[in-house]
Length: 598
Image (cartoon, rainbow, N blue to C red; front, side, top):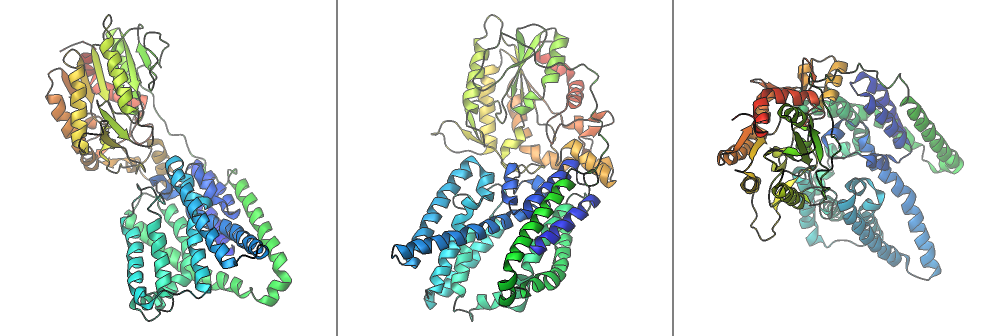
């Protein structure tokens, strides 16, 4: 506890020296209070994704494991003690009772983990209940060892090799997109560690055991707790800065953490351990416990007060968002479009009868201002039919965190479009975050990546490009040639939300251009999607494709802002100002889909 409170206090003291945004500073103070109370694991279930890119600048995120550990220290002795008392009264063998209880805990915890992995993956990662099986595995091993159980000598070396490979595979092959600890992924490092321990008992002369018992390895082990405490706050605070490559910045932070771990171990950990002599504990144990509780509570209260203090939470100048020159009107009430099962229609323009439909995922929804301007210029109305994470592809489903309803939604919308006989929809604009569905990492490091798959289970498996091409082709066969169809290619995506990035750059004294992204990275991410969209559009006479890339990029860089303001709401959705920039460049194309021009 003393080293933890020291590192937490130093982290709070260092935070004002780094460009933490106001919300991030308040969250840091709140997480410091939760850390002192040993409940930071549950604090981070409120919205923190452990492997998400934005979690890389949460300085106390690593304390979740200490929360789980301390909760184990509270629960396990009471559970074991109670079970031993019960088994004694019932005249059971305590060892057998503990082993049976351990198996039941492992089974119950593992079932809960499997359920939470599907329903609440944050809780699955951070909760003591979903981690209890790992503690129980270690506890059962300890009981077995205390009772003299050993692994046959001929199996020790093979088990040590398997354990080492299991741990190494967890390090090198696990990635942020897998469901960890998940139903299977958590087993690999857990069983690997278990096998290393088992194979090392009574096998000290084995080569692997000699390596683990060598002075460098033991030194790292001795310093590991302090090093662990220091490494993440320094790494996370360093990542708020824009300079240097990530690798060297992180190596520097880890090196500084190792240097700090030495005095922390020598002058704090060791003296505290030396106080744990029997004569001191007999006389002062109650006071030590009360002092620890009181000190932790005081620290938590101070952290909460600090999080609400202007001395800690930085004041930043507001970033000018900018406004478009054209007036923007929202969705208007209408009785002409039905209530769809999965989509809430948005009617814009003049009149109640839409002539053009804007159709797609959330990137179609962001074109509401564009639809309004084009409909106004054409003297008619348009309807926006957007469903988050559902591209306008026929017969295609999306495997994502949402319920698989994309194919059914697209069927319903297409049926409605085709049934408009008296007042038909004569034009359709298709817009989606096309490149997202490729499964490649986004610049912002989206933790969960959607995957396209055929709705028909009997279709053979196919890759992203094939499904995108066939799904879009089938959709265009239904829409064209009786309608004009405009496909909008994906807009550039950025690593950070524009307003946050500009604010952080302002705080750190860096130029605004720091928030731009290399055009080559954008082109590389979009290349496969652009090739498919271009090929499909060229196959239809009444279909056009427009590419917004040059709207937001020059020859070398793409920028989420301009002299007039900010073009992006977040990392990939346009503001009204960004919409206006897009509309200006492609006004003739948007009017074409309304039937104006050739």
